[in-house]
Each structure stands twice: as C-alpha cells, then as structure tokens.
Length: 257
Picture 1 (tube, rainbow, N blue to C red):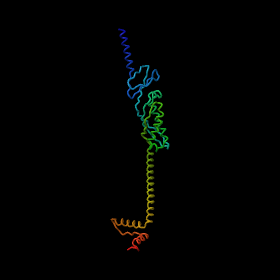
Picture 2: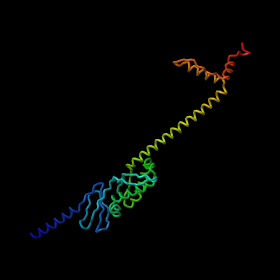
Picture 3: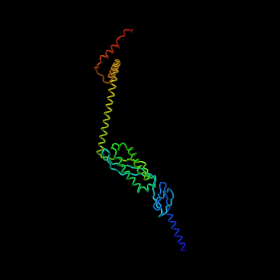
Picture 4: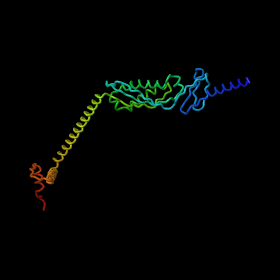
C-alpha cells in the first residue's frame, strides 16, 4: 500500500511537471528560451516544451505594432515654437535580439522615436514642416530603422499627425499667404499688360504697312457703333492717310474701260 502511494505521488508530480512544461505559441508569437540563464533558442509557433526551473521563456509578439508618439515641443530652424506628434509602425524581426540586446524594446523604441522626432524636425523651417511632411516622414523612418536594427526591430513607417502652432503665428501665416496671392495677381496683371502692349505694337505696325487695312478697321468700328441700341451723332475723325486710300480706291483707272 505504501509503495502504491509513493508511485501515485511520483506519477502526479510527473504529470504536474509535464502540464507546467507545455506551452502553445500562436502564429504571431515566438518563445525565446533560456537554459539556466543562457540563451538556448527561439521556438514557435505551435506546441513547445519548457522545463520548469531549468528553462525560462520570454514571449515576443512579432505582429506590427502601432505606437503613438507623445506630443513633442520643439523650435524650428526659423525660431518658431511648434508642437508635433506622430505615429510609428514597427515589428520584431529578430526575437533573440529584441530580448537579449535591450531591456524593453517597446519603451526603447518609443523614447528613440521622441528624441529623433525633435532632432530631425528642429533642423527644418516651419514652411517645410507644413508642406514637406512626406519627405520628413521618410527621413525619420530611415533614422529609426537604422538605430533599432541592433534590437531586431524593423520600423515600417512613420507618419506626422499634427503640427500645432500658436494662434498669432497662424494669423501671420495667413497674412503672408494673402500677400503672396496679391503679389502673384500683380505679376500676372503686369504680364498681361506687357503682352497686350506687344500685340498692339504689332497691330499698329501691320496697319501702317497696309493702308487699306486701316480703312477696313474704321469701317468695322462704324458698323459696331451703328448696331447699338441707342444711336446718336458721333464725330469720327478720319486720318489723312485713310482719305488718301479712299481717293485711290475711288479714282478711275486710266487704262480701264
């Protein structure tokens, strides 16, 4: 009876050890195994065995993680105070390095993203922060990806969400934009006047070389005036060269019939 009890106790202990040793890793999970404190390997997904006391396991999620970078206060290169926040997308590509080389890879990536955001954006002027976000996103992503490579982290994308500035600066930017629109309008108007003047000069030169064309232009003008709803007496000056053209056109041909 005593032997049976001992056997039962041993069997129960073995079953308990086996039950405690069985782990199931999902498709997006990896298990970093340590044997008596030394790195033993990365296992998973699926069913794995972890011996109690002898082995320890650190679970790593290899899915893409979305991290919201807290709002950062910075000063742009043109001395404008700006508040910026962003979101980064990253995932673990090497579970061993993510556990062995850094204490907390999530917190480390977050802190690095904050300092990089301030460092990179502080080198640009306000206009670039507002208009060149795509390029800034690429620059920040490249820097983060390079520095987190030793942690087994791959930074997939960085997106700047908001660039907040003071209300007084917003009004100044609005005035600047309005002045720029007025400048462009004046330039366009001046270009139009220059082109119109050039066309008038060309037309005047063409009329001077062809007296008959001047007569046709006068006749067209008279027709336009006469076609109005309110006709009135109009004194229309005719230059002498037009009169000469009329005389030439009305005089009979000496050799004609």
